[in-house]
Length: 190
Ligand SMILES: [Mn+2]
Image (cartoon, rainbow, N blue to C red; front, side, top):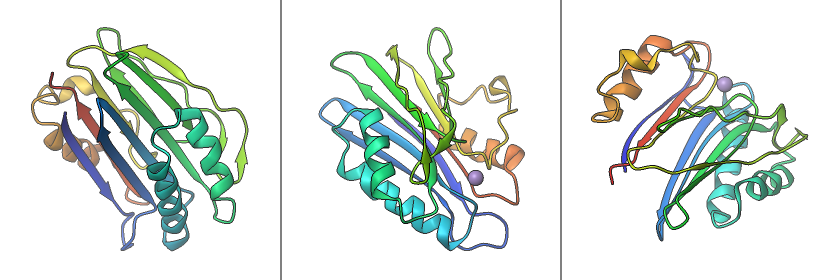
């Protein structure tokens, strides 16, 4: 995979309450973007703890990871998170998200899996999993709400070739100064 990622704190803050994770193993990839509620140190603590949980439970299904994480981080202020698992053996994407981290999948048919209302670690309600066929040259985009979702992907025609440049440009143009901003772009190159 070819990866582009930007994860920067809100203006005048040193730590970011957003974090991300990308793990590859055994024909599978798990991608996560996590946004700790608000910003600053408490947001950072919550998202870091959530990230550790996800990392330790990568082999579980994406819904289970979110439910388990909810139990694990109850003492924090909570997070929004989205997970995508790419399984190259079954040729499937599975996606699950709660709160304001959006996922877009560019396939033959673009997908925008729904993120459920709620907060992981505080007020988790329904969790759902969405599955799609995985195709060669698929792209996964995930971004926190520090990036306005109004960006137009056709303005970044080099996205597949240079996802890092696209990630940087999108955050420059659509990042919100007052919030932590993260975007992760993963391009399948097979
Ligand atoms: Mn945010």
